[in-house]
Image 1 (cartoon, each protein chain N blue to C red):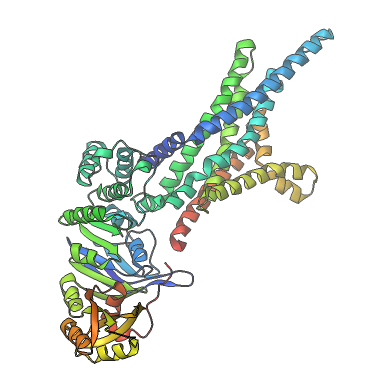
Image 2 (cartoon, rainbow over the protein chains, first blue to last red):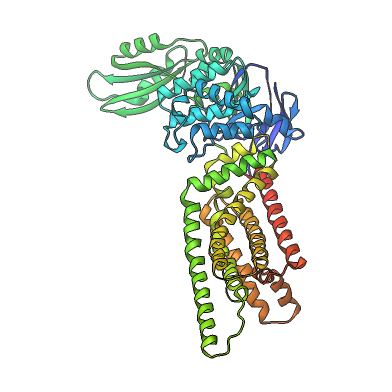
Length: 325
Length: 255
């Protein structure tokens, strides 16, 4: 359904997207994962014909974004990062306007406006001014706008950013509900979101493609690595952080230990395991046998940055930094 | 065409959903009403004076009232137009709705024409208020209506030309104030150029004078349609809209 080959987008000084290629099959939900400034928005803007790529090609439903932009636009529903709303319009008025822009008219238009209002749960505010709506409602109006012409492809740029947890869940449910009829690409920098919604994941960082894989494979790869926070307390007297660190590093299966914090005589470390090892039991035993108190021991979710580091462990020479978007 | 109409309707609604349209209309009604009153008062006074001198002369309402009122309206327009055009694209760029327009299956030209026609329609509605004043003349006298129609045609052409320039300037900024100020500066410049040309007779003064919108409007206020002036206004409109289209295109390459 979507085919991207060697897509590159250069701005005056920076290369926002560098030679990215991927393919998305019909009906899939694909997560576009990357830290802020990785080039997610730029890639999406190229796909939606908002801006042309500097080189490379992108086709949507067989139409090239440069050669047949009208055909591509007709088949795409797009929700930018900030929903494109007019605060001085009523919801129903706005949806009618967008519907007309997308080529609907007459009975079709009325029917679709009613359908998407129902589906995105904005029917109860249809007579309200958009400017008066809460952020959650605005996001849903934004989604309604994107699906009004029943497009083959939906492109959603950070659809859950800035929402509260309840709204995030509602939005995710909504997106999952749309899956059957549409091919969906959604961008996010939140890892669990991808796990919950998507089947396929595309990871980019600094404008480069890092990995494309199924979510299943990806989480397996990540599950192999365990990160544990260990807080150690001396039984009496003071405790040397370096001594504890070297002791923890000797525990079998531990790949690295980082000192995170020291306060009230206690030291907080973060220990990461090697691939496929469990280390919690051994860490606890090692601390106790050394004559210290184990103040706290808990698993830590890997942050996105660590996920990138572990996924790109072969080429992590340079620290991950943000590229200007 | 249908898309242009959709954009046109949206812009008109947006003008009247906000205080802009009403504010501009009130401002214009006040100022143009004042000028109308002043010129009618002068006309009446002169008429009485010439009668008291015992040498009543025929006085032409068109010459004494209609023409100066139209000339003044043409200058008031220079102040109104920046406020009409400043939001057209600047607002869409600031709020991100430009992404919706540009990723919808419509052509840039349809967006531009929709917005420009909406601005022109609002301007025409504002001008219409002054036509109410002038129509009062028909109650008490018998002015010639043809120069009036020509005058309004001229006002619309002049307005369309400045609105096209304003629309272009609005695409260059996210900030309405900057867009408005820029348009105002250019409108003012195009007016003032007329004075510059009156100080010199060299070729450059003629060229500069040719660019003055007010100088091109003046014949219309007398009821004279000169193809030279129409060509000027129409080509300025084309230039403004063409620049707008190029500027929109460049947004995509740069943004």
